[in-house]
Image (cartoon, rainbow, N blue to C red; front, side, top):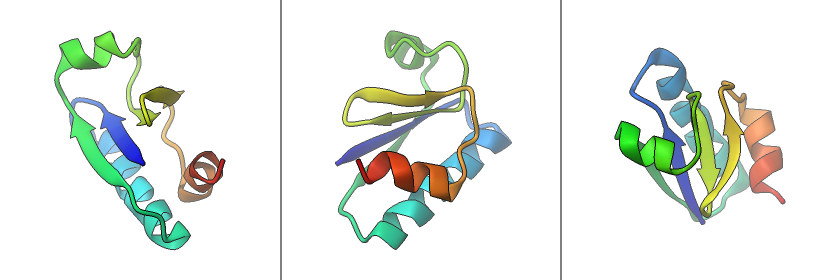
Length: 77
């Protein structure tokens, strides 16, 4: 599973990254987690508001700081 956190590095983006890492650990799944800060790449994904969560190339959330449980629901599908 490939997970990308899109954002410029603001506090919400950093918190989303921490929440994703915690959710992946609790679910015991293998995932490649990366942070995308390049604004052109973010816009290229169709995201206009950050932070955003992209799972396997699909935007799962945009403009919202998801908590760990919300992320676990998305990753568990």
